[in-house]
Length: 237
View 1 (spheres, rainbow, N blue to C red):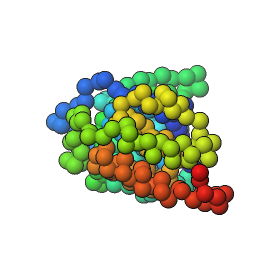
View 2: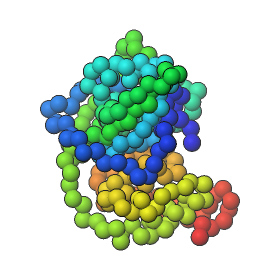
View 3: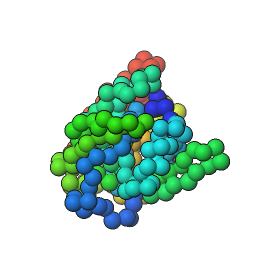
View 4: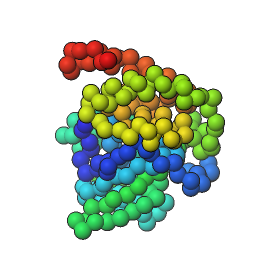
């Protein structure tokens, strides 16, 4: 899995923790945010993930963010070539807030980022900063700010769980499935979407899915394309 240079998830777990912190009201949302162009990595509202920051420009970003509103945007580049300094970005990402910050002896930052609300990138800001900033629009994603009960049951995930277990095992992933099943349904589906060995394009589809029901359906659709293992030319049983 390729990553943007200077940022990497730190010991990511499928047992993604839901934040109990109150989400921001609409009027408090910023119009411009710094962004992490991180390939094959997405976050969702109400999930918290650890990140290790070590490249100087992203260290600068975190320093600046900690001095202001602690908000940054996670967004995927449209390809995973690390040679590109400023790759083209997808339009949809997710804004998060830094909820935990620690600096190690090497000057690297270990942070936890809590997803708040998805956004649409409208344009990129030109500046002298080493990192990238974008003007963003939240209008299509205000539902992310409020918890809405979804009409789904864990029984709906039985087939998905079976197929995902096979796929994760084939890719060498070790998952605490019992721990995962103790989470709420939205946490489970979002955690599976975030940690899955899907392509960056497939993960982008899941990020842009409007609600949990559609995201579950998209996961199921994507899994059907993995029913035949293209790497070993054998059917996944």
